[in-house]
Length: 243
Image 1 (cartoon, helix red, strand yellow):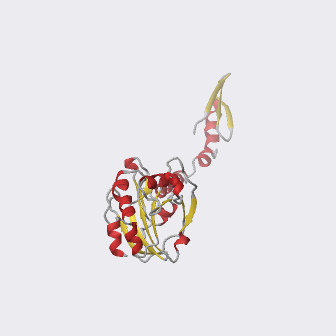
Image 2 (cartoon, rainbow, N blue to C red; image 1 turned 90 degrees about the horizontal axis):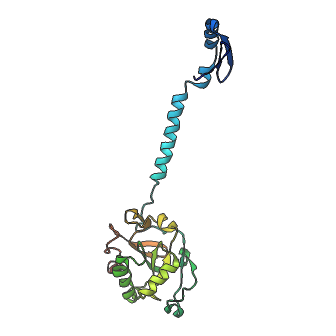
């Protein structure tokens, strides 16, 4: 316990947090006796101090671990009902053939898929190489085949905003063939267990590459790529035989 010493006129002043004791040099015995009766050590160094400190450290460590290792939802599987959600998209109109027109974003709710059979495929990012070269164009090209097998809607989803999705889709000719929808908050994709951490590539958390066939809000086909940089089980050629 620290004490403050003041020397003045041959006397010594000791200041404790609870009491100031003033003695002369000749009264060391009395001083010792008084100090022995001070509850300073008990009050300021409680027996539970070290255990309390350990407990606090444990609590903070536990909280930190729970923050950094937040649980991830299991991916959707065949037979599951899809989570409810709301997306944003810009419906295609002929006016959007002009690159200077951006359109107006509106909501699309999963409830609108009730009683319908649709294909939903996800990409990590608009304008990225694999998505632009191998994934979206094949769905655009074979949209007619999908619809001839009873598919009423084809949707491409990513975490880019609705305006980026619309611009990218128009560039690749999605137009009326594939609706380009946005889950910019990743809320639905996280609930569906369809996200991937691409921070190592400078992209942060994204939707992974996948394809779902959904019939009356229930999943009948799931294709999730082990590597988001490849297209196999999520490609249109994998989906068509499952319809």
